[in-house]
Length: 374
Image 1 (tube, rainbow, N blue to C red):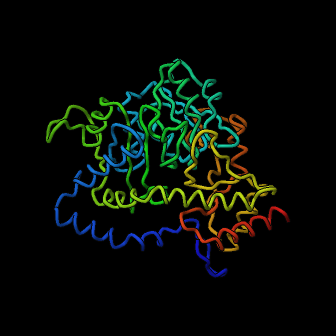
Image 2 (cartoon, rainbow, N blue to C red):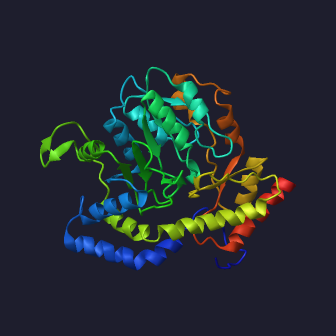
């Protein structure tokens, strides 16, 4: 961590510094791709899929166009569709539930745990019906969900499990990397993620040979070979140039995650003994800290004070998915999922990224504590 002047703004995420470090390799990769003339499902995608599968500890990794498609294609390959229900969390980005709707199923929202913000297994049990086909847990902010209990429920009730790992690349639960535990794991390579590209991209992981083959067909128009189609698929292929930069980034990802954890530890140390409730750490696992999200009293006033001090923040999430306008038809009311709804009034995500300057961390803490104590 290096010192900077106090007058510079504190960005929520600094992607430009990382890009400058990778620029030469990135441009070389673009030139090599152009010279090779292989732009769709080329060698970079093939090699990245192998390297990604090895990192996660699974048999198969399938590159797709984005994280949302990774969820949709996973659900489709598992046979989830009209008339089915999928239990998921209301405290996440909209894509998690949107994917369930896109395949024709109905999202059923369970409440969350107050410390990790992940889906509550006890609430999952309460939401299971004869129509339940799958569970879609989200490893929110980089904290792994309670996968041991979730998998126990799934086995008991013969349910599929689709892990949403969009915010949790590299996190672990019970000695396993997230994305290697359920039937499939879904990843986003959106630029803000722990492992992000310079555009959109996604990945699906699985240990099932049958799911691997099915998803590979689905991502490429349902084709078993060129011009021969056995089902209706879609066009969802990881871009060759994005795969090239992801291969570069994957080589140093452990250092990047360690950098995020270092920033998180600095925050947690400075907030000790204050009214700021810092993120919990998994009992048997590792937090990847895609986001560092605290609970604070007077959240809106705190965020405004940080904005006034030129400090970037994000409000993840201002409203539970169960209360969104688009889901009025499902009949949830205020008070339906109280733990989630309370979290939405207190949570604030602070800047966190590898190499974040120590001066910036101190400025964030000073500005935040100035409001909380005031």
